[in-house]
Length: 341
Image: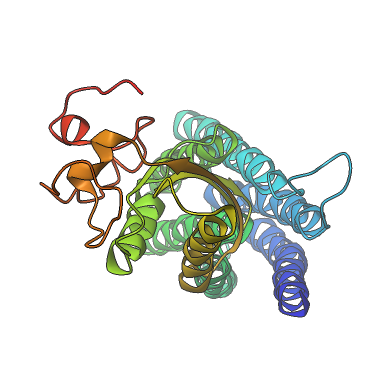
């Protein structure tokens, strides 16, 4: 519990740093815009407003996600991370649209740019700071399984690419006096950040809709296969829900029918501890215990079963597909035909 509080505090503190750094970087970009009069710089500054709003939304979501379960929220508050990440992605898309509109206006009506040397220097420095914060936010977000920090990292890095595009456009304009380049680059990077925003929204919707995470399911399946015990005749109907950095796992485990309740519960406990020790997440389990049926003998690997009705024929290898199937495993289901319990 103390470790969880420490990790939640660490995520909250870093997100707060991102939020206040965003304000300082926004001010720097406004100064650069006032000096240059560049539409591309103005677009970059407006995109930074989205950074600030998103950062504070993320800060609030981490505060909520860290709160313990209560009567109104029996699964905790972790889902809020998906919601705020979705809002952040939507804001990025809106910023991209605004940048594109401003770029089109610049291309149509033209724009005269000045004080390019100072503008290039200021924008370049803000880009470096943004990228550093984004890189660390991604690393920390993946380590802590925090969608908010991952979304913030992607957003900051996409903002960096936009900023570098602005710097490049200013450099080109400075040497060529081709003022249309300013608007063309803004148009290009406006399109790019719309795509980044779409990916973030898509990821958030996956979490909200509890879409199956094949990578996570494959990891869990590999853990179970590597530590499989003969009395675990079958694991099936596995479903995983994600609540921020937390996991809720539902599954059925088939055990010998003659096991006492205490023995069966101990076997279930082994599976729970196995997953808890091998997954770097806070996990909640809901395992349903099934008794074996006569058709289970053909896939049961227990060597000394006192009630075996038929010989062992084939070991069913667990995969992300069959560990998720609703039916108990049997020779029929392992061959692809449906078995009805």
